[in-house]
Length: 167
Image: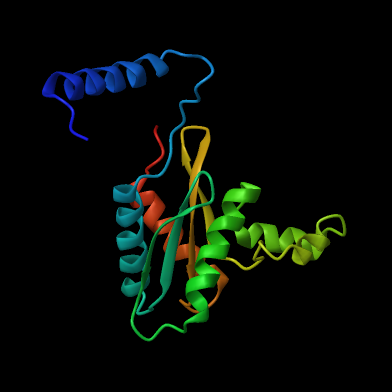
């Protein structure tokens, strides 16, 4: 079925007009989120930070909904680290807490100890929430660099480089 040029133009105008109208509708959420470009900048900066310390790693970025946006893996990093990086990122996003701190809380607080029983969460250092202002917009997870503190350090250096906090 073919449509005329005026029909196609009318549909395009309706679609553009409709989406513009949504921006002013209070029922439609307007939220900051991680973009692919931002995720790739964070991943490049993370791996550069690890490389500066003579380490290799895998890093993953999830958006505010916990969806994988991007992942980068150095050569010769164990295959289990790819899933670990993604789970660390998801855990940091879901709990709004760096995973190293969350792991410490689970070890020291009986009320938080059962967090280990949730299959979706990974209580190992290396996951850090990403913020834009006071909003969590996603998270980054790093694995395979040589331990949770080192993984988290690479992530924090990248965040400081790509998402500097306003002064």
